[in-house]
Image (cartoon, rainbow, N blue to C red; front, side, top):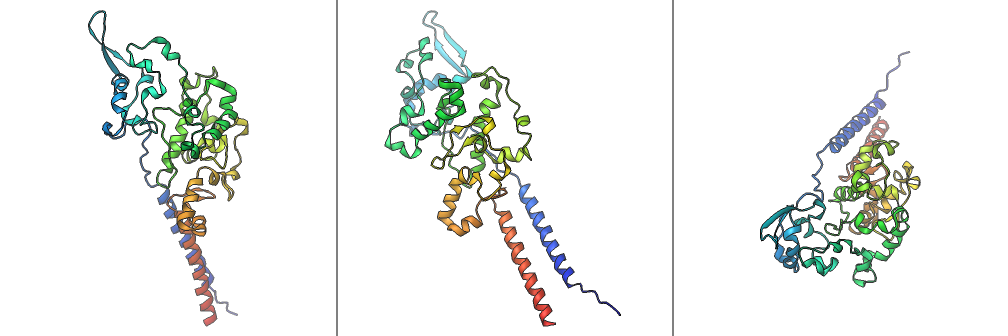
Length: 339
């Protein structure tokens, strides 16, 4: 008896293998594509027209000294012109300030009017700094930002509990440079970098870290060695996603918890009920639903259960593979029925 090999199922398997090979190649190409350059806060942006800002002329009285690394004055005793270095922490970049959220303010809105006199009195350095709630609390104009709720969360955070009045809003948010980062499809990577740099300003800088403690700066790579593929997590997820309690009504969580309470379960992010949907991608999901509708937003959204894929490559390839697999099965079945 002679047996004839039935090779038709083998052709189906071969076609599927070719499709998956193509998909893998496309994914690898997408993953290795050069990323857009992220401009950190420290980089000097393009020159701005100071005439557009109502208080720029008055602020120049401060910035003519604090706007550069050196300043010049006439010594009233010797009548000589003296040039000195400005302390680095007292230098304010004009261009960075005029793209910040406080760009319309006068310096003396936050600092004492006595600073208009030079040389400045030494005791002015001891003046109390206003916090966010001092200016924005109880004001209907800023109600949408929920400063009161942010203040409550901050007071419950590990920073506030451990360091009390020494830890203020300005430890994380520089009043001269702070600007809101809306989380859109285009600048999500920038937002992640910007927010993480706020944490690294202390936890990655020993000089700043020891302003509040005498402890040695922790080795962040060692502390996070349990994370698979550290680099991918550090560049695609904000520190606060794992180190802060998420509050659904706030855009950004401010209740930072102790390290023992930080998220360590993979499924917390890599699941359909991901905490990333409720925090990092909350803005995007809401926008996508409004633009695309619920079905398309969930099907082709920028956040997936295995991590971000901004180009939708994995989603589209998966749909193509699924459709072609069904097509191959239908063609194969039709040929068998015909014979």
